[in-house]
Amino acid sequence: MANDIALFPVSGWQIGPVPSHDIIALKLHFLSHPFQQTEEAQESQMFAMTPAQGRELIERIQAAIEVLENSDAQGSGIDRH
Image (cartoon, rainbow, N blue to C red; front, side, top):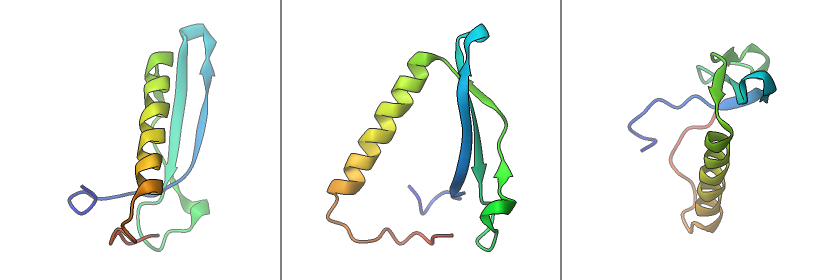
């Protein structure tokens, strides 16, 4: 998958609840080129998700972490910023 798509490393985020709309707001900070400094990161739009979507996102991230931590493969061949 990673070899077929452009990857933009996440360098930070803003996240928080919006009780008046019963949503979670999320904005990602990301690097758009290999020589970009963290303090120059781009910012995504502000995304909104329901609590159920937030729980599903947590579960999928945890599952991906488990795969990586339990993998015998050393290195992915992906250039890191």
